[in-house]
Length: 402
Image (cartoon, rainbow, N blue to C red; front, side):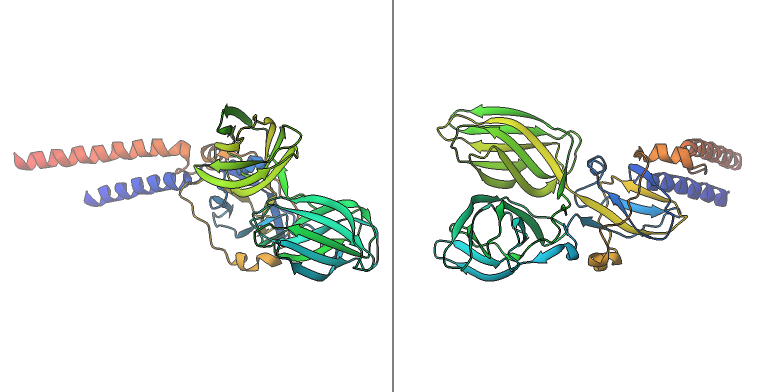
């Protein structure tokens, strides 16, 4: 009798554990079968980002046996391929007492260029650049002034690439004067240009669906913009279009979950673009300090997220599933992370099915007795059997006591 009760208890425990394990991840999506072994990528689209944390700790790729498949998250950096990037020689880099950083680069072939690339160590700061050209490094002529370098950084690398665009020029030497003020200079790793004029860089970010925002202007204090992100999309890029007087310069602060994301100076430009650490709060806020000036008119607020892929090595003929959303999940430590730089970014894309709740997906595929639709009938049956044995045991004890 005791062995029967123990067996029933074990069966109930297995049923419970099976049901609990199935509910750890709330959502799943099937991944298409691949034609051959190799590295494949799954794009982290705005829609997909709704179901995962910004550190991707609750994202899993599992095979048809339930084993986790190692993967790495790669951003769209590098923006260019090495054979399409020509490094320009830096022949001077001086920092003046006024905080201006002057970098001289040589256009050896004297080709006509209208942009070049700065690879910059990650730095969440704003700077402006004045660009001039010369044929002899003695007489300099202005090309462009007040070129903005916006706050920008990426999470998949320790540096990023920024485009500097200017009027078409063929000067032998170009001088960048970076205005640092009283701040430390930026760390410019390299400067280069595209060898192919028709080559276009991969964009850094993709726009999220439109957001709603509400503006409250407080006289003598500032303007408060509350932005609603109901889809819980990842946000790492913010673009604000505004309208104001011909000349203005104001401080703006960005907050999410009561923490400050960034503080910037917005000036007479009508478009403010900002890169921030990724977040997915449902509500976040902007505060613009107006001082004694009339408030600015906010035309639009657009959010975006850094373009990323989950890249994994998968095998032909196997079935794989994407598991999503688990508040208790922690980041997995895969050996593949140690070879992240060797994993290509340009890999074939994998399509996935519509994202469904774990329950719905299990109902389509799981016909075992431990599936969701069978679990309660099994538990009820076990309870009835246990009640029967309990009744019999009570009856036997009652007879012995008589």
